[in-house]
Length: 199
Image (cartoon, rainbow, N blue to C red):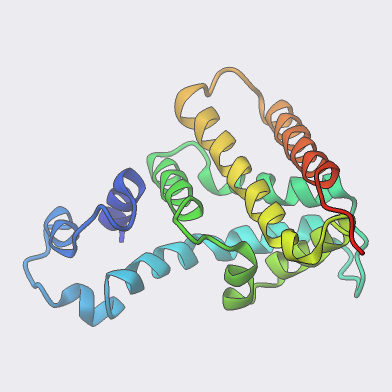
């Protein structure tokens, strides 16, 4: 999984062959990947899930700390719940940075749809975050909500990747989170301002 994480993060899912993963892992048994993960896609999803559970636990603690049926989280809280747990998971080590590269590739895959991913995974933190974001996007047509949430997540991941990999000394954690929230708020304002009038 560590070898696949690094390779997928560097070149994306389509850019990595199964044989390369096995070679990088020093695995001579060509059926090992299929035995453990079913397929290359299965391995890809196993990597995703390994990191998403702790992210989701932290996300839920931010967006709904009291476990309410209707948390009524502010937009800033929702956006913080997107970025803060990712920073925790990435940390300072090579594995975290490899995961960040992987996540950047994942969120930029053609057809990426955070609403579909959320329904498929059914993680409580992500589900609560998405529900709260829908409330904040009420000025947009419902069919644009998924695009807005996906773009906010993609921007968050892209900014975090650039900060951590290329400019780690330019921001402290809180300043970076504030910059990310401000950027995502500006995105949502621009989408709302250009939304077609209903009726």
